[in-house]
Length: 372
Ligand code: PMP
Picture 1 (cartoon, rainbow, N blue to C red):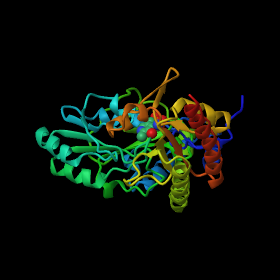
Picture 2: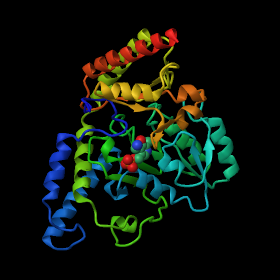
Picture 3: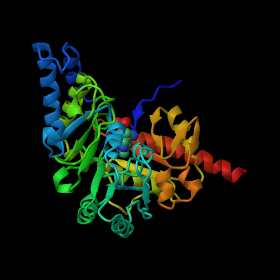
């Protein structure tokens, strides 16, 4: 079996940055429990607190607002655990860690994947100051960026609380929590080039929170359990590294745009999703009516190229993506979607290899269709 050589799946996870790897290895040498009062414990505590500062810095939050978690799934669950008696409103295109966390009224999106603000306003009015809204900053499948500051203004005016899953946006766009006006922000280390298994919920001072995991007093009693010091240290290092890295986005956008033009030149029937909206520079999500997702994924994998289907894949069965269906994409086309996503270690040559392999698949499939 050929092992993948070209990685174009950064929205699923990112390779570990060198800075993070060094921080993880150094932190693994620390013996103490960060809660212990002796010198070993204090050393581990300093490491956790330095990371807390780096995470807060990246999104303009104070370290006291950062709650470390095992990742964004847990951060999203912790945030939604604060809903209480409020009415939860989420967009229809959230990550499953929001959609599955609690019962909610779903906000529709338009054909570009943008939340319908008129529907939001009407629902906010019905909630009579008791709304808890959760809308992501950038979608993991299409890269489409929501107007969060505008959403925050509506939610605030209606006396509600706003949670934002910023997993895919942080590190790719400058994100300022106060500027956006959100009460809660979820982050994940492994999307930034940090280790897997670390994340954070940033909760504005005074925003209500209820512990979902009880036990010791860690993380201000909001997240019991001995801290994963090494993963947290790697997360902090990744935040420091991406903080200096936004120039990368303009380069990726140029590559992505050229890539999409070449894709359309090869196969003009290709549909690119969210192309008319403001999108992350690193993401391209598209489908061709004659090319099922499995055919593409398998063919590309054989060519050593790793991408994702734009669909949920469970027990080997690819089902149409809830994101694309919510955007009104026909189920058959939604089930054919592919996502190419770039990141800190990508090269434009990776996209050339993709286009070559995809072009071969396209040609073989269209010839087969003509012959049958
Ligand atoms: N939200 C979004 C938008 C994501 O893309 C992901 C990861 N796929 C998550 C939440 C969950 O993050 P984690 O893997 O850290 O649990």
